[in-house]
Image (tube, rainbow, N blue to C red; front, side):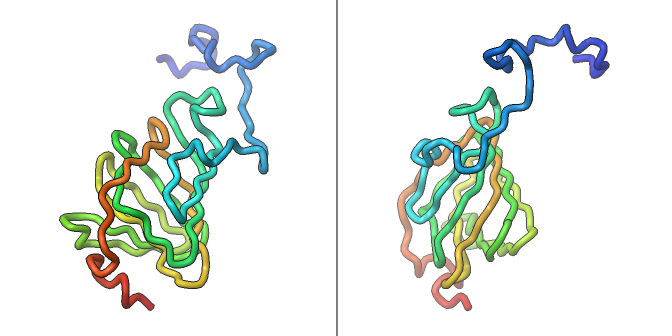
Length: 162
């Protein structure tokens, strides 16, 4: 594709046209996000979709906000073929990964993370008293494949976290 804006009319943008036939940015207004049940929920985590194939003309991206309750720990899961990027808006996070989830990384407000496709992991809110909020994006969309649960004591340093 030629990046020259003079050739813009040669690009097929028909799938992005609105009811008036115009190609314009699509805005999901605060408070008007689609039902969170469409985003592959896990108990204790709420995913709010801002941009997705379910309610915008987007075809290759999911972008939303994920809220985890205090002390939250996800079931082991992966995101299928999706590449996942995350940004910690508020709180303290931990992601367990590796063989038997023996390894982990901790993150705090302002940290970014990339999770490769098909990588089993466990997402945690390290704080026992406050919620954790992430901004998350996935391509091609929000895929969540839950795996068999593991016990808390199988996760190194989880039970004795500060």
